[in-house]
Length: 112
Image (cartoon, rainbow, N blue to C red; front, side, top):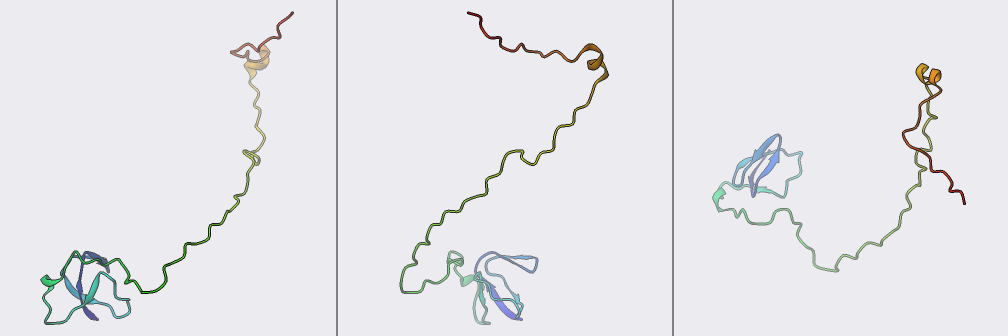
């Protein structure tokens, strides 16, 4: 176990750690960017909470090239192509009366 100092708020092993907390860090876990190794003479209150912790150090050299755009064709699906046929259920009242009348009248051709 290594003693570490939290540079900002962080979460490890089910415990939320605040800025300035000194605690044990497991050896088998990679050291997080929000903590640093603690030396016994260091004062936890001296750490700067505004120090950026989520940024990786930038390496000098070439700038990153933008990635090449690619077009991807999505598969075309036929709407309701795999739907089962509707099930027709007979109704005794409709059969006796000759069927249900529609609530609309179909347009009729206009005679000249």
